[in-house]
Image 1 (cartoon, rainbow, N blue to C red):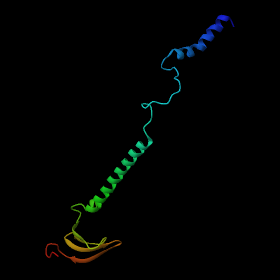
Image 2: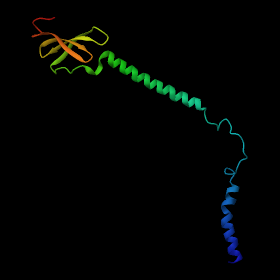
Image 3: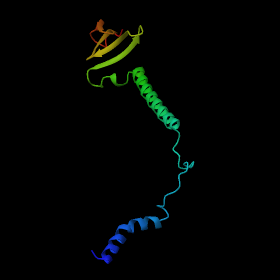
Image 4: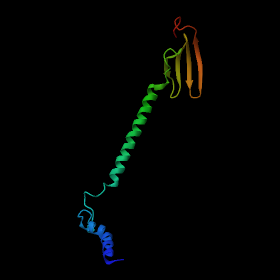
Length: 130
């Protein structure tokens, strides 16, 4: 290998080092503690934000469930299905008496956890109201 070719190879091999040393942005800085602008936010701040967001979502879920249970949200029957709840009265913490209109007949029903019983039937809703 000629001395000129060695010089060219040496220049090609040293070129990235020379370019990197001339670039002021890529020049290595001496070790120093990070400045306030470069520091990460405190871990407690992120944890607080996640916790508050989770509590907000859980509160919204429980509020929606309570409202649906309180108003008996999605349990009503469609009009025209031949079955309608005329009225209901709570007689205990989990017991109710419900008046149902079934195709012109009215039925008084006792509802408790695990049981439903017909208490009284009226043949025609128009002739005698309870």
